[in-house]
Image 1 (tube, rainbow, N blue to C red):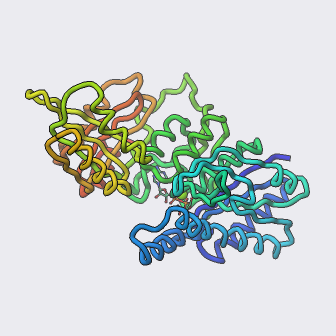
Image 2: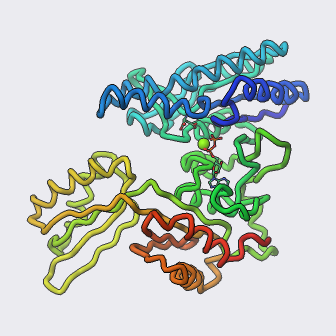
Length: 407
Ligand code: ADP
Ligand code: ASP
Ligand code: MG
């Protein structure tokens, strides 16, 4: 019997009506002889609502209690979905992350899955149950509830698919696949039938929130076929796999454009230009689990340097505080920051064999009068940091410059 892990995001389970629609879909798949593990998110808006209540009570809630709170959103949907399945005469059983034995590390609010003991889910599947698991959560070695970061239900789904050796992991959402860019920003965006793991990983990590980055990493590492499709309308969606690296096919120069308003920029000015300084600046941030993204160092004539980098906006205040401390330790000049920035990235494996992508990108932005603050490149992507007021304009002008609306 084929085994599928199917994940339904917040909008897809956003009301009783939607939960009933998901139950209908699952009943039909069950009838067709598929074994099913279903991963659900909290109903749309619920995670934000819970976060909002915590913020009303405390500006700095305990990370452990925040995870206990946020994990409840998904617990509501697993129970309701099982009830809807029972109503349809189906055998179904719900599991929270801890009951499903999803072990994570102890980094609250961004925990990583270490291991899943799939024995209980397996036994249920063999007994003819539809297994319904709460996304976005797990349990650490001391039995504390952890959460996997926003969008983490995608990662729960892929990790379970890998643990149970499923045939495919299907991510049902409110768009019918992966588009050349966010269709909410560019209505002319085009759906892709296929995309490579490599490109999807770049798009996700550069801000395309349709899949959590970790889920794509997992799927790529274990070669788990991953499909993104609509829970609202039928269709094949987009398959993310290795298989479309068909040499005979001309690879498109650019597959997609990602945007991201989640970063903030920090600069420490007047640091000594000598070995070990970048480590002394960035080490303490890393110790606090603050990820640093685009990094640029400028050297001035007087033997001093400026180091600029971006961090997640949630880490901005803490990062700035740490940097102020490092600034006085190093006797540097000062620290400046800007949290009104956006990152726009163009991604495509075709870049490997073609030159001129950067030129086209910079020219298109220049024609719109958009100033580039930082640039970062890799083999298959170019990212620029700009003023966040121009983010949507930048996405649309680049979509046009690279002719992405046409196949
Ligand atoms: P879910 O609640 O189902 O997890 P998300 O909101 O996390 O759904 O992800 C789906 C959204 O991702 C879409 O509504 C769309 O606006 C956005 N998105 C961003 N980039 C893309 C892209 N390249 N292709 C498709 N959707 C994208
Ligand atoms: N409910 C969580 C969130 O809103 C996890 C998820 O939906 O994937 O981020
Ligand atoms: Mg999501």
